[in-house]
Image (cartoon, rainbow, N blue to C red; front, side, top):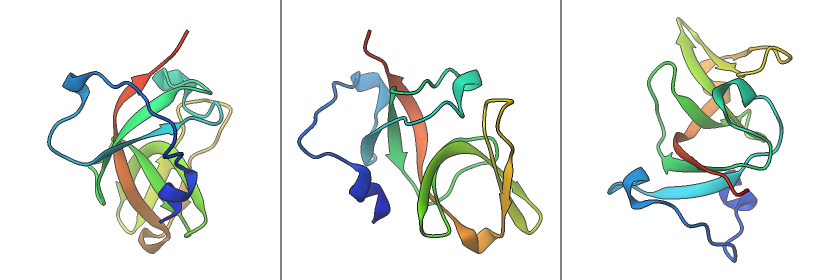
Length: 113
């Protein structure tokens, strides 16, 4: 899947045990500043629980139109899906329900200083 195309199986990230449970998890490096107001910065490593659905308001990894992987807040509205950034410099993007595939939910963040 496209998420695996972004992963680096030779890189390992130390994740505190209380961030993960029995599910399947992976980490992604954040590229960009669209989620800064949620405390997620460019270069951060996010811990994602693999999932194909999420509740409204959850920050998710989403595959958009089969091409683009993005980290945004999910909002389901009637017959559409909105992907909301946490940065006033970016606009919310709205798609049909068949154009967005949830691939995981944010459960934590690892930041190196």
